[in-house]
Image (cartoon, rainbow, N blue to C red):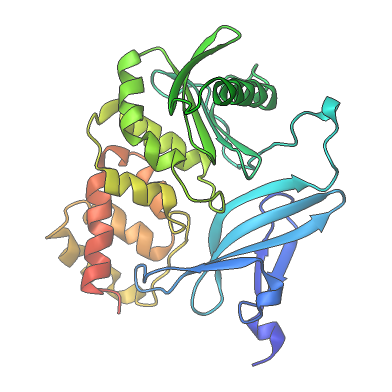
Length: 306
């Protein structure tokens, strides 16, 4: 097999430039993470970067066993120019294609700050707010608490401008919420450790995933921690599937729906590559997220697609 045949090609999610790397050559990518079989595919996530002017664009891409690009995990921009005091903190906002929501239910603000990776995910934020300036002020509040207290509280209440903000912090991350409903803050508290208590910042949750988790918490007061943990950490939500057994899909859907009813509506689009798992979870079936994951586990466990 020639090098050209081995090369995986994908568009940079930041600038659109076509990039290539060789999954068999570790010098062409930064890192890789292998996953368990997913709907009959062996998927691996690779982190690949390239330099454009004074920026480095980082992409995490999901690739199947044949070396075919299946989707982006995340992407962000790193400045190669040292930040000056007037330029701010040297933090950057994670690149997202989807528009930023200005509210999700009672949530008026939700930011996730990566303290070691120097990134900010603006999950929910009014258009008039300067995200980097707000993140800088929140970091100042946390650092003040770390100076004052020998063991700073994990959860804090702070006020920034006219916003009352609840934050949960660890050495790597800070999650910030401003909500018009205090009971919602209690719901977030129960899942906050899933978001902030991580060993490193190598994997950055997508805004769309975090917004979905927040939306689930507004309605489900006792969400299953294991399912939300998978949702937050999975690289496979945005992967496009396409089973080679196209002629078998109607039969697979019918048989699976006898066990998992939601399969009748969502399994066909998933197997044909018309929708990703995230499209299903973030669409009209978001309240059925438990059953969607039950379907995924059923298909994988029974190895239906092999």
